[in-house]
Image (cartoon, rainbow over all chains, first blue to last red; front, top):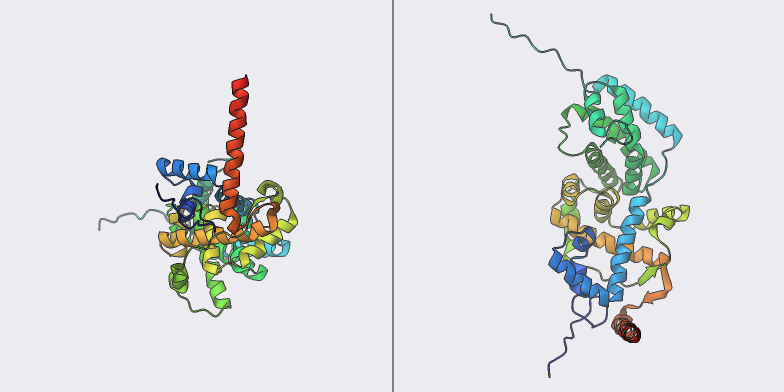
Length: 107
Length: 233
């Protein structure tokens, strides 16, 4: 009779052995930077482990939410102040027009 | 890439470098809200966000001639804004000007925090993003993060910078970007799931094994029924 594997489960239980591994490479997995063979292994794990699948989904949703939820408009008064400052700065320190090419003197 | 016939950033940068203020103002219009939003989340203050936004664009004016376009203009601006915001944040907290690497190194030694509240969300991010209260919640949740983790998350996930650009912008190693990003993502996931998670579809950490086992039984049963049905057909 073979001994059953009883590794501590990364998410709290003791079923399965790859939840910890999944957590360790969660970033690469979510960002699509995992080698196809490893990816397949993780997907097999996810197919049989709902809590891990939900965590991966939640992380993806979190990222999407922050990406979509760009903060608000700038206050109008600040907007005007910003453009005034920009124009002043442009006059003083903006990129100078190309200086005319220096003519080499042969003297 | 030009969008709907409008000049792209690169073309505008070229014109601005040649002295065209209107081209530069178009660039500012295109990026001001993004930079302002990033600054607000990095500093957690309206006033500081205005300072950072102004500093970013003024610095862009002063340094435009030297901008070598190795990175996209948007990435270049993000880097300037991140540095200005972190400088202000350190000043506010009275922290000495040390690198983020030194400031948080001991924190990175510990174990990765394991997810505790695990549940499907009740709604999709698309629908959640449309609500004003979601916006406030995202701001308050991200404000609770360690500043170094927050900066990495905002640059990498919110602004979409690559790992190497994030590392360069924050002057930290790529390994540190990765570990901080994982911590930030897990912490934000935890907080948001406590609000958006469906209590009815929650997996208690201790019940994980049981849930997995129960799910397996359900799957087995479904597969058996499917086989029976197929056999009957």
